[in-house]
Length: 232
Image (tube, rainbow, N blue to C red; front, side, top):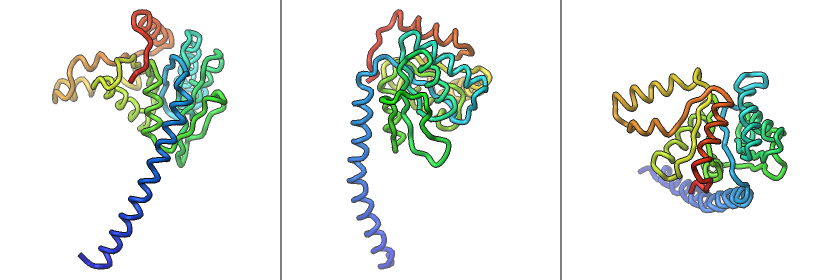
C-alpha cells in the first residue's frame, strides 16, 4: 500500500474511533432524556404521516379528527413533532385537552416543531433510531397516514417488531385505502403468494380504514378485551 495512503487511512481511523467513543455519550443522553420525559406519559397512540400534507388536505383534516377523538377516549398522541400530518395530529390532541407529544428531529428541510405540542412534551433528537425507540416503546397503537419514505420506514420497522415478537402485539392501522391499497396488493401477490417471503397470518397484523369512526372504534374494541401495557 502506498505510504501516503496508509498514513491517511490510519489517521482517519484514529479520528473515527475517537469520534465514535464520544458519540456513545450523546446517544445515551438522547435515550435518557426520552425515557425520563415519556416514562409516565400514560397510554398513547403514535400517528405517522407526511410533513408535506397541508391544512385543508383531506388527510390533514382526518388526522386531526382521529387524534381529537382518540384523545377524548383517554389516549395521548405522539407524533414526529413536525408540520403536515404531525401538526394535524398534535392539533387534534390539544383541542381535546389530550396529551400532545412531539418527537422532533433535526433535518435539512421540512422539519420544525409545530405549535400544538405540549411545552413539557417537546423532544428533539439527532438520531432517527433513538427517536423511533420513543415512538415504539411508549405507544399502545400505531396509525399510518399517507406519507413518504420516512413514513414507510416507520411503517415497516414497527411491522417487523410486531411480526418478530420483539414488541407485544399492538394495534396497527393504515388510513386511506386509495393510498395504501396498491402497496398491500403488492405485499399480498408478490411478497406472500409469489415469493413466500412472509406468512399469511402476517397480513392480520394491520388494518386498513378510511374514516375516523372506523379507527376509533377499532382501538376502543381492542382495548376493551386487551390489557394496556408497555410494548417492551
